[in-house]
Length: 162
Length: 432
Image (cartoon, rainbow over all chains, first blue to last red; front, side):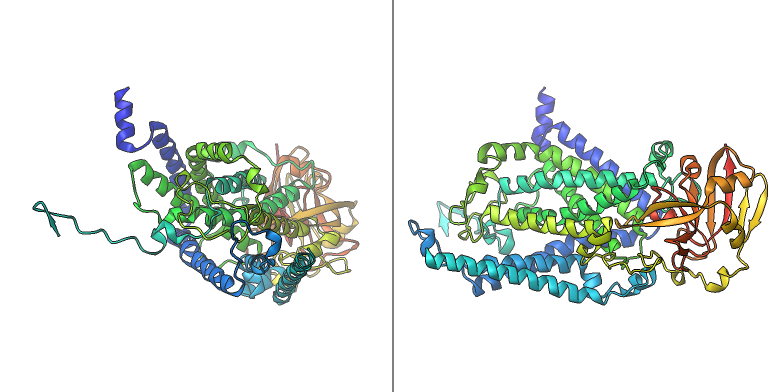
């Protein structure tokens, strides 16, 4: 079986790895062909590539930036070895992060309705307008922050009394 | 600098920015976190994929006028052999509801998973072996197609189409690319997941609070931070937030499937508007104006043309004088919402009998709409023969509104929403 070992040495993994990869690529190729038959192949590829780029080069830096700002606004108390948890007041960091993340996620997913970009498609098909959605998103976001604020107040109260 | 006559090689400039492992600060990243997120994601993906493929089956694309995805190619024998049944009226509503609820609920977990492995995107060296290159290529397909499929799905639900390709085939075939890449990913990564759970336990890390959260061993995975900040949130805190987002989104989408009093839950969903009190006050898909149907085309001069062994032409009044049947049936849209109403009209089998067709094989239904992709439908034998399949003339006791298909529309149990053709003008019956 030195041929197999030689293969593994050159390729970096067993033959099963390569075979599975080829099968996977074959199915992907078949699917691409079907899409191309139906027109607008370059537009499809563009959006496909845009999906990767948007996530890695837009979403991630945005998230990192927001995180850096959040850390400045509500620095987490450094946990010194031996310090009891009750001695430190709870940090507001997570109470800002979680509602902001939920609100941001909703905006990311529903921006066509919330920001009304979908109006030209949505209105003729449903007969309705997108104008209610901005208000609904703001209301939900407000509720998230309110709930988070209440939870924070409760935690501080408990830490103060403890 | 010279030593023993040999020049030392010039120092390699250190990697900058995200290419350095020390750039990534969170102590939470590691094989355990990635594995837990994957373990949660995989069943949701499987459910979404199965219901998605069943949705394609429900369209009976082998029948004339039913396909918007072109020929099924190699898979034609499979789809051709599967006829969507009419025996359970709620079947398509359930299938699509599950598809959209599971699909949208998976998104927060997917985003968290991408966050947890992103240091590996920037790892150096970029390609260690041929196998590593193959894996990275497959990951490009996996991430690209995954984001593409979920993103197009979410935009489709909101009736927003900012692209030039046709949504349905691109979403369908994009998901094949995704599933193929996912299968390879699971094959390669399953040992890593098993090892991570064996070494760290499946739920043991959930017991750690933020203060107790420790970083995983650096050599256990390339995603582990080499210079982490102190933990500001525990792993259970992160997973809890992700889980809450998933459940919340799922509940929101479910609201527009179940409808009724729960429709208000679908706060940000496009069909989460509360139904009005009138008989025609339920969600519309494709207003008459959007497909070019005008009131002038639907006056008393409208005729229903019925073609079988004989040809008939019926006015609306004549149709109303025939024995009527009343059925409570849902219309379920591919976007994952449904609405159930009380429909009344002439059973399809009744009209087939009048045209001299006893043993129904199929019905070809044509609308007077010129625009839109769904101006015609073919019903399979089971759908045509079902006594609940109606040419509906009224809904909830009142005439159909123009937007809801006046003068007559099709309503068939478990049939995908767009195939319940509106503004019907011709029925062609085929006998067996």
